[in-house]
Image (cartoon, rainbow, N blue to C red):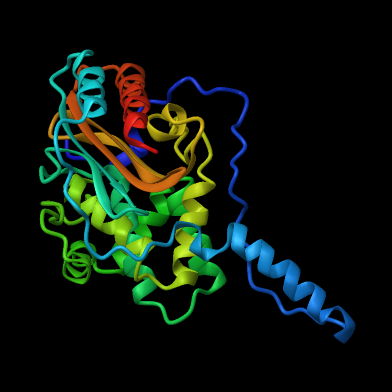
Length: 307
């Protein structure tokens, strides 16, 4: 069965308590009428707010990354966590440190795998590049597509943006090397990307992307609820595996070519700021809860390279 991403995935048991995120919700721009005497005070207060929660939370100046050197014990542990459950796993991983501009972990990072909902990052970036201003409708669409992983919004934006042409444009714009559009034009979740290309996407968001657009994307990703729009528990991998971290994630799940697809990607802050990418696919008989748990354990193992 060809992937149409998350829509037909089974629902996992959901935890009744929602996890409270540490990053604030995106603030919409408003017009303020301020008495003159309060101007200086408000400027000072706003400076503090922006410094803590503004668009530069995930900003980096990195233009090149030093390759990982020598064996990485955390990588082997993460691999074993994923391999131990069986079901013929195909894995690729990469972790880049956006503060030190180094690659902290890499495993088959150039192997292209189905993206599932991770492709929504490309859809969002393409939309912002084609839109002169971030209107309320654009902000709402991006937030719904990235936070709740809303497939309906993604399908509408995919169609209006030319479908596979979105991927082609982003490959050229971001210099992606292993990314290709889906074989069937309407199946956006079957877009293929490598872990190293996902890292390039996050490096673009953290670097040259306009601050306003960076704030919109990362705020939406930081507000991802446990239950996605289709009811799937999207707190596998990074959110549950790194409970001491601040994160902004884009997860993906679905089926492609008779295999389960489960991806956990995003920004992670634990001291330094990282882009973490865990891509995986499994035989169709794999239980969603089992492979979700394995990806969460792998994310916990990756904690060993986060400073």
